[in-house]
Image (cartoon, rainbow, N blue to C red; front, side):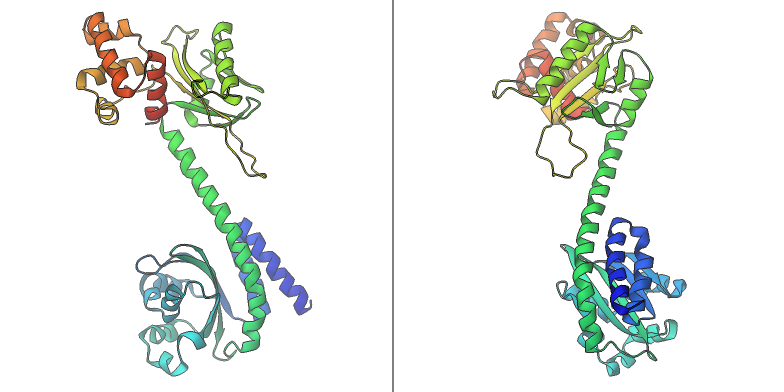
Length: 376
């Protein structure tokens, strides 16, 4: 295979590894072949405090030495220190960092020459975020010789593609991390959370949503979305969803709604919040949520902590206890009975709660509580 064809293989390997991190070792092997190197690594450098290498993938190194390097000596490596000080320099080689005479006297190279048989290094790096760099490092033995200007020039062609590939990989990895964190956060709560697209189809549901629908107690899923057991409840719910998808352009119009839905089992009604989340999405985005549906089961959901209600809304202890009962699905009269207060006292406290939460109706209050405190 010609050098040109091998170079094209390296470029393709960069982009493949950006899409699948498990392919970096194969990319490093191709890179070593093209550059006449005996070892290589792909790394991410965090230079925010003491330099760290949270990601380090390598080939043709003794792994016990690499472990010692990462744990103890990377921070005194002159090349690492140079990279931290020069995050925007695309290609770094020994001639920029240290002389051969200085190597023989430096404590890092004293360790290096005892544990690792490479002598010369060339690095291609990209600044992927503030205080964060990523790149590849190529290594040659003393016998293979240093990286000459022609080697650096040839590597500069590859570096342009490395830069693009790392930019792609960084975006994909960031999105994956955000999606994973979001899913974990949603799964922690007792509330069932669904996201629907503009056709009312479910594009996301958390663990509680899957458990709720498997219980088959008044809520079921179809290809065209969520369906409630009773027609009058379902008509109301579908109206909220339609309104959230195509809201009327008026500041006084609620983009969705809040309701209670009775259950065939006779258990306390579900609390349901429907809210618009329509936004502008990238052209290639597969996930385009238009509506968020939050469903709470008062028989599963722990009462909202009174302390949280006091802190978030500035309620008194008595107001917080009443609010917690309402959020759990009780109506005002039954909540008053459970709290052993008169209905008149409950109405008076509810008026104070409305004022402090800037709401006017009980449905509006419940919607606010679900929106701000549903996921615990």
